[in-house]
Length: 262
Image 1 (cartoon, rainbow, N blue to C red):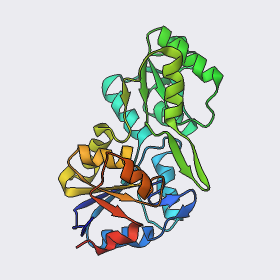
Image 2: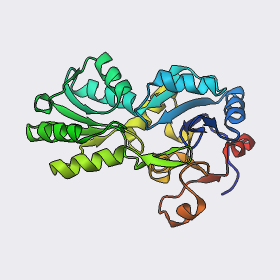
Image 3: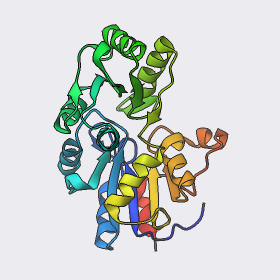
Image 4: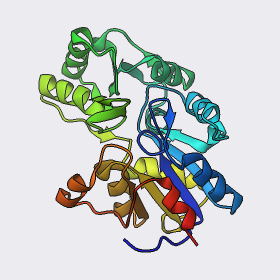
């Protein structure tokens, strides 16, 4: 889709874009190093709330990509900021894993085990999701709790395929409660993008979003007036791209194609 111009900032999705599982994808290290050497601002953006920003930064360093915690934004961090600005010290019934619980507690929220006591039900990608958590969410909503979620992804790419992501938990809770989630803070939400832009100190038009998902990464960029590049190393192939109404500005076989940016 034509020559890719240089941008002041680059926002990289992680899973399926920079790495897949514990394997760095082709060209990722060289591309990120090259952009940084050229004075470009680089941040990493993940919808996954199952690890902390510190953990993602550490993983990138272990894979050979030097990364500070401040260079990583994920949906649990965005959700904590969002709730903290609106309902600090709220009581939360959480469908989520330990890193999310720990981040919410550090921010001053009270995590409740009994849904009857909750102000919000937080729904996240949760590999320990079970009937007891679904029942707790039902009780919370019946007592007036509001629904918020980390991300809308249906699946998460892993080595050898995909596994269910947060959309499966959202669907279960909405099905049981007959209530819709009020806010999903992760991509493609402008809430997440604004956190990234503030971290970079740049405007949307100065940045390129690079990701492997049309409905989150590419949609977020296009809706914000930001250029967006689809990389074909994750969940989207050319057949899915042809069928989708969401179109990127650029299509990359892998990240090495960014190195030609002038």
